[in-house]
Length: 314
Image (cartoon, rainbow, N blue to C red; front, side, top):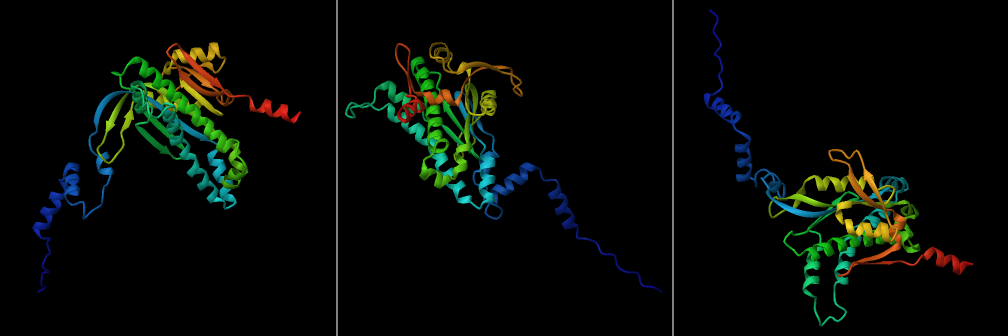
């Protein structure tokens, strides 16, 4: 007689365990990770992103800035094994954003330091500092909040000073990279002269997303997307700004000073056609500073340095 081989069965307990694990929901697994995070991974700020944000309504100004020609600039230098020049550029490039804001804050300071800031300038100083700043590769996103309960005059002046920050930012990029001196050329390479900056600017309602203490605030809404689309269309360089950003200021610039031009931005993905004003690079280079007074605007212009140089040469 042949002996029958005993059949092997997996323990029932293991089956039950597998069945129980298969029934775990994503919420169960998430709670398991949180309880045993030391044994799994350190979630850091990602743990906050995975949570439901606190959402509030805000009025914001959004700026997107991007470099035209950066990919080719990197490619050309990397072919020559000049990666360190790209690093030099990036280190100095990101400095110009904070310096432009600090310069505008400094302009609010009284000539006599013993006098102290006026009440209005103290409010403006807080409003013109971005509440959110993000590096997006070679691009940047900045957001300012304009509290609706602040005085209309303060809101208007803050809006104009933020536009002035963007203009000074454009000037600093020009002075450092578009028209570099011998030291800068040695640091960034001659190719840096080909780089240009395009900027999109918009103002309106958005939702503020607060994910917790580890992360900066984020914002959602069509106004954020509009600013990004305007930046993409500000080519080859310049500032493309939503007309509603400041109608009176733009009317003054176009009709009184002959600076900028009205345009309609069509076929913006997901948005209606937008009325906008475009300031070309050459026009921005002529503007020195925008100052809002009690009676209107005081816009100072730079001297025509090219003409002056031609006079010297002749």
